[in-house]
Image (tube, rainbow, N blue to C red; front, side, top):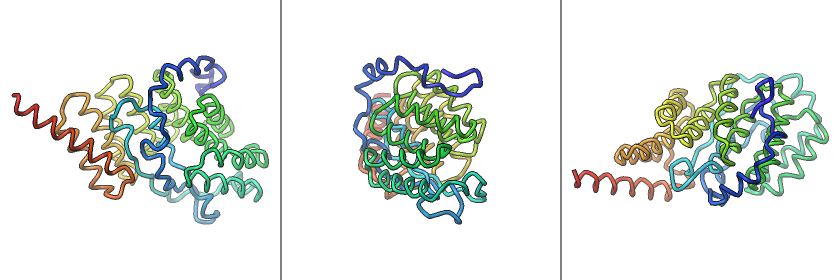
Length: 293
């Protein structure tokens, strides 16, 4: 679902309410996954206000694509700060009023209040109409509230205003498309984002989630490995994709191994108990399978 320039186009997604009805059994609870962790991606350099230096993890939206109790609906960790980022002229031109509103919106998201964040992000874009980071976070909040069309429109605005150079917005757009059942278009969108920046682990994880939905296990496995190879803090989410791949293959011992590897990397994960339960079930299934051989 793209324009002639290859950019997502939510205006053409007239069917999304139907998709939402078909998928209303999916993960609706907002706490599922790592969404409620909300430690943030560091995105811009140290010279900017501390709150403004952060971006709410896009990958939390993976919960919106999750089905069943697979690892893709489980806890994820934040990405590491991006070093070497230079403040752009556009960023310097963003008014203090817009930035203050943006900061307030981020604080509400960090406190798990997406509804409360909306008015602040709206004020930010009203004060700075080209503030695509604010549109992106507006999309994050709308997606948390399961407002698919609104989220798609906000992500689209971020994509358009950045001329397609803000891949996080494309990752968000792709995840919402995947949520509403349009994995094929989601695949094209996330790949376009990765062409812009292949060094964001979350892009590879999102790609893996979509490939899992399409039952393309080998490709999903490769995407997870690409995330791990980047060796950033958020790369470890690749282990959760690999856990799902192994589960789909019926290799429960390998599934348990991937979950355990993730837990060792992030022992304080908010969803540790849920992950441990999934790991323990996988171990029991592996033992039962071994006895039956």
